[in-house]
Length: 382
Image (cartoon, rainbow, N blue to C red; front, side):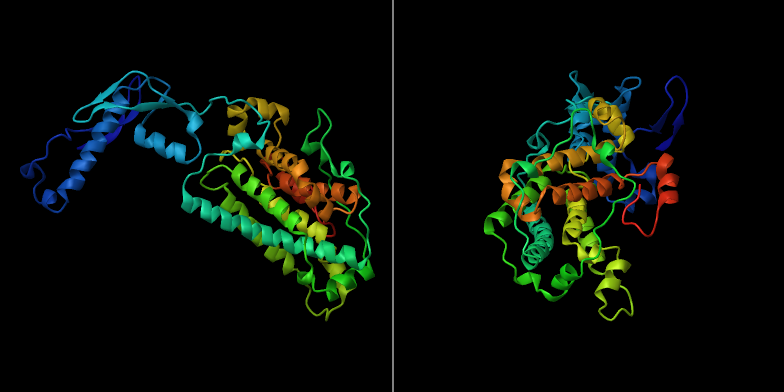
């Protein structure tokens, strides 16, 4: 048996030789050094591949049932179209084969997060996801406890109505329209900084209903992640953990407890638990409903989505919109009230989330722009 590129009207990589019969006299000592069952299995696969190739069509990708199953595992089942006519392989009978169409157009932008939730029946996977959800919830709760500790220490009363803690984009606008080149952080507040430095926020009790809503919110985000090889919920959890660890380790040497100097050194990150929570939540949501493909390919497969987002940061804007739509639901009213003392706090929170999620995708054209505009004295630039 040999292999090589066969040129002509249909150039292709080709295997040559009869794989149906093996004779020890032909292969000599080599045949005795190989497991004959492995050799037969290899021959069977080559036979199947040969039939897939010989019964294919020009400019179409032909796949076996086994290959199609692997594609489905990667969350790309919508690429597959079952072939209606039969393919017969020697010794295997009729084969079930598929056409792969990577430009298949789906229904466009999902209107409900539930549309993106896959069916999951593997209990081992469910247990793992529950652990990851609990992990993210604990990280977010840590920031929420600090928010409550600061609110109690400053005697801040809830002034926002339920309606004032609802925000949605106006018709025709996208998340990209909200991006700001620089985000101004709150000035140093000695009283607030002292409260955070001296109060044990872990002793703060959060309303069980708020905790329940937070867990439900994270669980929905978990289910809205697709089963991609990389851009999945487990990846989001790893990013979340890393972000949380980095934020908690931003310190300056030789400050000896100087709270104001630490505030200035960290650009206010150590003095603003709402900002901390916004950055962590951005890590949780940054790949929600990610298709596992580049934005260039996503624009081809989902032209309606690409059009809705004007071809800019398509996957990232989709993740933002889906996540924020869920967050604005009536079932998370208590969670929003626990996080935001007023509407301005909610808008500041959203601004940080929008900037961070959208800056996670930088194409070649604006990479130099981002680098050139980066100012170490500011938190975020774009």
